[in-house]
Image (cartoon, rainbow, N blue to C red; front, top):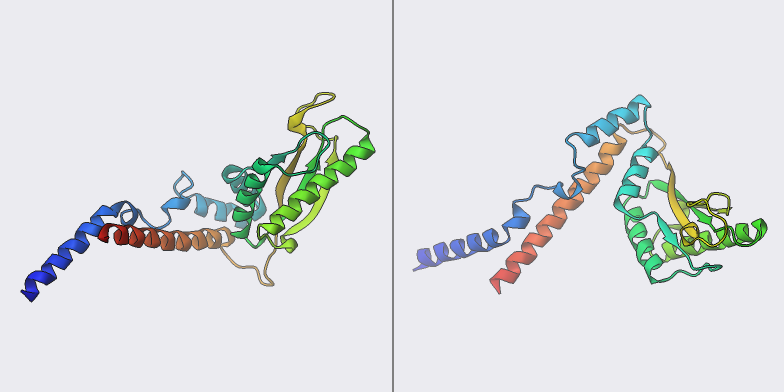
Length: 213
């Protein structure tokens, strides 16, 4: 009877694992697949050859993975619900890479004087910086807020243009340790790989517990 019960339990566990196989069958790190075999290795090679910087690599990732821009109402530096949701995504991404440093650039449309728009751009950049800090980004990670006023429009038109009333968050550098380490980008990928493996395991266990009920 004990043997039968043991086999029954083994079969039940096997069935539970099969039911959540979508998590177990996926290899660790699949969630950070960049769509091209060997990209981390290629980036690391370019990094050490001086052809590309780590900041450039991570800037490409930042713009590909999260929106870098939020927009504002006319003559306003208030963040609406959509802007806050975008900044929440930015903050989540930024907190994963504490070695990176950022600047927030504030922009306006061309309504109003140049001096007023420079001040408005600064208010917008400061509003974004404060919200990112509220979402958990270390203040030290944001090196500066910069106003571009009306000088760099996204759409070159005179007068009212909602697309030009914006801030842009940009990666501007990397804090290096006292001694340069080999494989800087590889270290970041490895960190994400380990985190993705833990996430897959947690999902699988949650799926098994749900099936067991």
